[in-house]
Image (cartoon, rainbow, N blue to C red; front, side):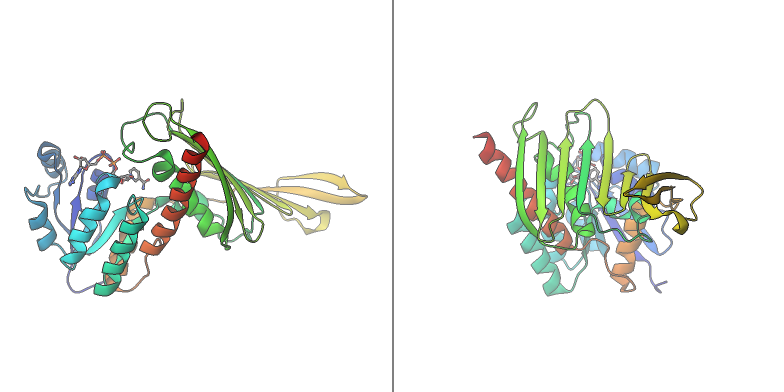
Length: 327
Ligand code: NAD
């Protein structure tokens, strides 16, 4: 634990920002010094609820803090992040890092030059349902991901690919250890002026193929990942927190209590079923603890600025392909 608490401020305390406030209040070696929101009524309400100070000026809060959580709409991330970094402050930027690659590069370059931490809030990386895969040798050859959500005005400042699909692009990049070889994509606008439903087929150089669908015009929330490889099928419900693994083994190999026998080409095989117990952690709190530890230097950010930029690069490519396809 550091000698001095890290002074942190939260910029933007809407739907997600208030959860940053809640967790930062409860991390031992963090001193939440206050919050800022362009909507001062909202800032005052959250400040009262969590017993912190609502600043009237963003610049004053930035100057008084060592680090900032940026939880404002995506199209404001780069401007705010650059302001913080210029004043030598570490930043946790909610996903996506920025809405253009040029801005993401500027943010990363500025942070590198000043030796400051930039962490990006790709929260699914610490979703316990995904972390449960760690003990397994997961090298999928086919991946299917679905992320559907009912319409909300929040996030519509960017296309669905940059708001929702980017979570899954980041998941893919963390699972498939190979560069992207080819992308095909299509989608449509339904309510907003940008793409609301998108599908992409991403082929990696190691021949892994991923099919990802994202929608912000759905009846209910669904966030599911399915991974397929030789002798293994895994299904993950990111929303419910459920990971189920089916493996094919020779009959003699298995210790699993749940198994189904079958014959293939004269050999006796079994399908085993495993449901790993998930860690009881709050992913947002874990990200913020990781941010604090990265500032102290005892950990590396789970999702670096470069990781955020890589996911953004693919998201922008997908959105561009969709727009070209719909012309
Ligand atoms: P929101 O609209 O609920 O909240 C944004 C807040 O920022 C509002 O209170 C607004 O008044 C304030 N704001 C707007 N412009 C500002 C500015 N220039 N300076 C200070 N405050 C400003 O949005 P949200 O859903 O909380 O999303 C915020 C960010 O978090 C977005 O980038 C979004 O992509 C991201 N997000 C990430 C996840 C995740 O799973 N990691 C989930 C939801 C949102």
